Length: 154
Image (tube, rainbow, N blue to C red):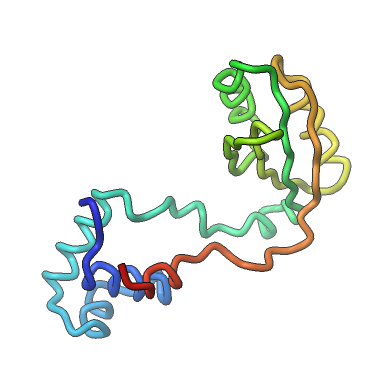
């Protein structure tokens, strides 16, 4: 699937508004048959349209109230090795390779400042990491969203 048509966009928008909606509820809301919604959902899933369920789980109730972003500077040509080692740290919930002066942006959750210090130390101890800069997240001001893109016409 290379693009989404209006029905796909409507379905994705309805799911964004109510991620727990049943197929029947989606069909009613969109004026489609249940079979159409099921077929479209299967196609969307196969195409990779849906992110993992983990993305919707809040780390705070499981004991990780703080979030930080660690900017990692590393030795050239060591990205794969560093990413493999960083992925072994359980508190790392996401990482992005970047262009510019920072090579890797790592999103971590932690229990407190001491825990963040330990996690940063684990990242610094990875062979190939030159230095890190850590910023404590003060709050999510714009949550992850796609509704504005779905509402936008091609």
